[in-house]
Length: 428
Ligand SMILES: *Cc1c(COP(=O)(O)O)cnc(C)c1O
Image (cartoon, rainbow, N blue to C red):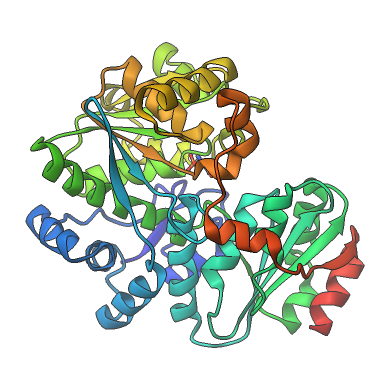
């Protein structure tokens, strides 16, 4: 399998998996996609899903990354997915696929853990430094993704005083091959510093560096796998055949991966793009007008994206036929007050507490009469302040998060200057 940029419509520049993975963004500014869409055998998916998530994921991964040795791929997938995934029946016909039982309690673990293990395979133990700028959550997901991968070191840059105590604890108590840098500046400074390192020819001649941002092919593809798993679990629970699937969305990597799964043969009736006040995609589905714009702040802040990168992959999946996309996809959006009300209502009615992102999924399922399930993208305890506003009570921290809060933190303080970062990297 080769991989092309979404913008390389003449297919002039094929890339091997390792190239696409270590470059990240395609040189023409597009996003990497596979040259063809392989078809899955759903009977095989069902059989494997009954054994384990990792067995099923390794099968689907093997179809779309057919150049990798099957045993090595399977080993990496099993190492990545050593945590549970659950379809939760909350009552009255409402089902949600909980994707937040990984090491950082958010669904990004599914992408980041896979990327870490597969990048490790492709890298073959050579020295490699992964640079990641983070405003909070991505840093710990990437760190846990690459934790213990031979030859790889992860340098996380986060803005001093601008991440939550819980996020800081998650990033700075991991140890091993993870090096957190507390930057005296903003998130934008962190991003700028990382960019400057990639533009520094001298540094790059002396060390191999790569990024691990969310549009990376190795983070995107594995997000297709859990749709297959959710389908088998929902089918077993309800006897249904073609579910609606609601996806709480921000940068739309998650939904684009679901659409890829459908093109691979997963029976889905319709997808629902569920957003907070940043409703560029639901608005497009309603009006046919696509108007990317600056994001606004909401209580579901991981979905505060005004110009979603992965929309380009969605358009690619439909070969540019926007009317066909509109037939398969519904939109739903809601504001902060509604999100808080949904959290409170869900707790009162079902005794189930959702994080603010997943609550948007519940809202969409209710409003559109969904026969299927929504994805739950984070653990409620990660957003304790919002839950407290909605219900009056903070949810208890899971043991691993509580333990991280109590551990000694290790971070190196650094000025927001390229020279300082370069010196640090070269001295490691
Ligand atoms: C990243 C994130 C989202 C949005 O996912 P996209 O793939 O960017 O659409 C939703 N919820 C949570 C908790 C997230 O961390």
